[in-house]
Every structure is written in structure tokens, then in C-alpha cells.
Image 1: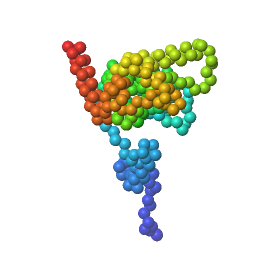
Image 2: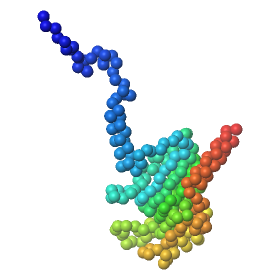
Image 3: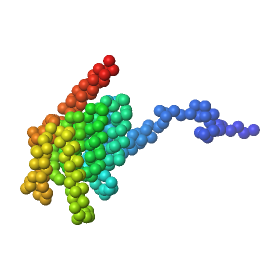
Image 4: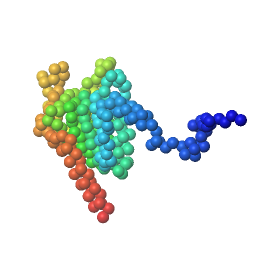
Length: 262
């Protein structure tokens, strides 16, 4: 009888030892783990420009209003936009979430759809939780009402805000009713800005209809300290000052709620 010196080895899938003790995730080959980590880093670089995304549990929600505020018309894909149908549900969720105690708005916008911008501004101003806005780069056109809608507003020294009357692009019917509608829409913006900032109606309209400063339009470009001097924005400051003020407002809000319960 010939003895076989080669032991029979069961395939990996049929090995009783493998069935009873399946390999744990941490026992995967290091090469595969390194490959997965590398692909995640590449994705973060492509999407966020960073190899690591810092995360922290906080009671403050940070919201960005950037690029052009997109309203009822979808803008071309190459445009950087803030879609109002994304922002509005977020604001409702922030209001409902008990873990979120304050909202910080970071603005760098060229403006956009008037009704969409006013809708966002009205929602922010009607929230029960304190909010702080900070204009970085620019808060132009309909970005002005959004900036002043917060409980407290900030602007960095180098940022600017362009104030001008409402303009329409596309076909406009040359009838008196069209001009009346434009006038009423402009009045809505005027009332909101004057009502949510310290600027007087006279000064606001002076900046709005000033001629000779903007190349192709009437209006004014206001920078940093001038926006505070006119009463449009509350303070000149950056992220640290805005965060400090928001924490202060959150503390005041908590104390007032305790007083009501007592």
C-alpha cells in the first residue's frame, strides 16, 4: 500500500475552522486597510480640499450662504449657488432640534433671487434661537437682508456690501403694472433692512439711489467699517468675535427661559 505524504487541505470556504471562527475585520490584510484609507483621503481632497475633516460635537450650527442665491430658476452648473430649497428645511430642523442652541451664518454672496433671499431672511429673523451673521468677502444685493436678519451681525474689515435697487433680467412687459410690482418688491426689501438694522430709512435710500459710484448702475458699495458707521451692520469683527457674541446670546437665552419657568 502506498501512503500519501501530502495531507489533504480543505478549501478556505469549507474549512471548519474558518466557519467556526470567521476572520475579524481587524484581521484584514494591512494592505487592504491602507488602500481604503488612501481612497478616503483622495475623496476628501477632491471634495473638500482636505485630507482630514475636523468634527466636533457642538451646540452651534454653522450655515454658509455662498455664491449666488438660487430661486425659482435653476442656474448653470458652473455657478456656485446656495439653493433656498436646501436652506429652508435646515432652518426648520435647527429650530426643532433641542441640542442646537445657536446659529452662525457665514456669508460670501453676490446676491441672487430676491424672493428666495427674502424668504431665507424672514425665516432667520423669526427663529427663537439666537443667531449671528458674519460677512466675509461680500454680502451683496439680496445678501444684505440676510446679513441683517440675524440677532447680531458682523463684518470683517475687508468685506464689502453692494446696495442697489432691484433689477430684473429677461423680458419685462412695459406696462404700468410691471413698474408698480417692482416698486412694491423694492419696498419689501427696504422695510426689512430698516426694520432689522440700525440704519435710518433716509440713509438707506440715499445709499440705494446714489449715482456715479457704481459703473453701470445706481447704488453704493459699502466696505467694513462704513457698514457699521451707517448702522447697517452691528460690529466689525471676525470669527472669534462672532463666536464669542453667539455664546453670550445663548447664555442670555438660557437664563431668560429659566426665569420664565420659575
